Length: 491
Image (cartoon, rainbow, N blue to C red; front, side, top):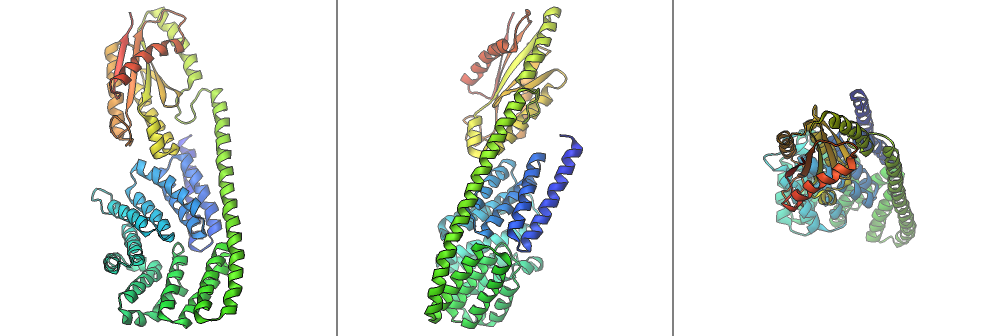
């Protein structure tokens, strides 16, 4: 891809992302999902991994707000893998936070706390670079911890985290998170017996609910506030919140929001004793619940369709690649090009009587890397290794992707001392890349084993035949701990 093409693609992705985020903030969730998905695809194509991860997180938030937990978790986990591989610390913290929120929604508060504390560790790591949203992420994480400890009725611990959150409530953040923070604070203080504070701020609380701009937490804010007002027996305020949410539900036009609204109304009419309305709402709830299940099932089926389509496209890509000369993933020459160029180099070296070298290089424990971090990060790893090999061989030879995680290096300078320098350079340059591979049996980073054969072609040899000789050298390295090289010199 040309630099200019890459820049234009990245710019278009930024436009989709910006529009999608604004659409999300405006509460148009389905439209936002379409725009952010377009941004994700473009960021991935142009290799802008930080923005790709950021967009993956927002997509998870959107699906969570829509009520599709399965899709939300899929985006969170895939984004987290990429964030960990690239050490985007603030984004790692954000994913941990959002995964914890999903457990929190399901009432699994101990599990939620585990993830929130992981987020805290990332945020408080002194080596992590500071970013403009640090205060916001601290606030959200501490509020989440406060909520889960409140749910577990550990009110003193919850209050400690509430105080920590309040330290990060800047004027700019409060504009969006005022309702979220005030609801959490009033709910906790009510259960701690500090009821005067809650009564003093009741009207402020109700006004904040009617003007809540926190799209990602709005549903949870309204549910929490209804719970508090029920306990306070503030029926007029409770009905006011429900009416406000009814307006929000109409604006959204989703079955999920109607389902939540119906649950709010059911609880209200049950408590005040209007049983006819309660029973009618129970019937409505059953119908809405069935519709929501059908929607989720359709979305799951659509997700399967997309995965199958991607697999089919990958198969088509591989068929087309076999007929071309370039490996689409790494940009290196492929096996077809290797066979073609090796024949010419061997023939010329045979005529001149010069020594050349063939190397076979294999990434150590690459399957463990794929299993740990996912295939998207596996592809990124292959691209980074390919770049190291290509830069090391530049000017003295060519590198080809032979298949999977195996590469072939064809060197026109085959002196064993020169080959040793190249092999050592490959090892050191790859070490500087620090590509994580925590389940490797060598070190918790990506390493590579290298086998070389130096020879003077006699004429008529094929690349495949000589690769077999280099494979002998490679096998020697693998049998002796990997992450090294072995050179065979043939007379």
